[in-house]
Amino acid sequence: MPKMPDRKPITFEDVMAFHAHEQPIMLRIASGMSFANMNLAGIRFIECDLTGCDFSGTALTDAQIVSCTLKGARFNGCNLKNSQIVSCDMEASEMRDTYVERAQIVAGNASNCDFSGSTFDQVSFAQPDLMDADFSRASFYRAVVLASDVTGASFANAVLSNFMLTDADLRPVDITGTFIDIALFADANLSGLDLSGQSWQHCTFHKGEFKGTSLNGANLSASVFAECNFEGASLRGVTANTTGFTKSKLDGVDLSGSQLTMANFAGAGLSGARFNSSQLFSAVFLEADCRAALFEQCDLRQVEFSHADLSGASLSASNFNLTKFHAAKTEQTVMLGTSGSRIETDTDRAIAELYRPDKVALDGDGAGQGGTL
Image (cartoon, rainbow, N blue to C red):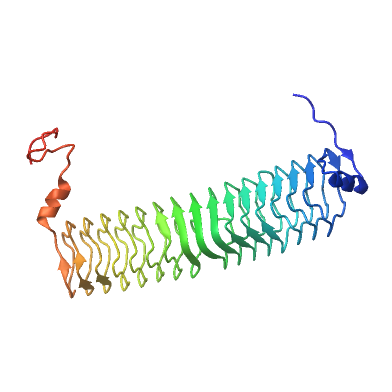
């Protein structure tokens, strides 16, 4: 493999001349130079040493900075609209109180960077190293952080709106006071964190880990937790109206005193879970494992328990109204002091639901592999 040419020093005047003639600046050393408050729109730095350069207040719209050394560089208050920073070493650089729009920071090293107070609008962080980066008080709108190492990073008091984060371990991340509204977290790990009282509305978590996490008093309304693990977590007093917990593991979890109107627990593991004194109007527990769960003194009006396993569960002193128990398992289920109407198993419907055309043929079908039902 041929050796890359050595970088050569360049003067400030030559930098400006290259830019004026729309020529890329390649393999040059411009460390320590100040470009503060200048117009460098469309400039291209490739394989350059820009260590300690000052771009504060600089117009860097449509700029391309590729495979450069940017350690300790300052971008505070600059304009980075439509810019690209690709495979650069930005360690300990500054981008404070900066409005960044439609920019890309791809790969490279952005550890220990100070992004505090900045706004990232339609910005993509694609696999840069963000260890110990400071995003405190930052705002993210329609921004994505993809497969980045955020160990030790701070998002304290940040705003995450229309935000996406993938493959992230958030356990060593500071999210104290973070406001989150409309966000997607794929394969995120929030185990053991104290998220009590925080707002996580309109969020989507797929296969998230919440082992031992405290979400007491949190606002989870209109969020989706699909196939998530809440082993050992606590969700007392949460507000989770219209929230989905489908196929999630919530066995033994305390959700007592919660607002769960129209929440969806279809297919969830809820054995031994506690819902006492919760508002569960029109919630769905279709095919959920609710063995030995506690639903005492709850509002269970129009709740869907069809095909749920309620063996050994207690629904004592709860209020029913058109509450559906179709094909539910209710062996040793306690319903002392309940009031209101229930919809029990529809036998004909239950038989029809057991019909498997790949196993059993109804009269006249002729195509089944088994006998006649």
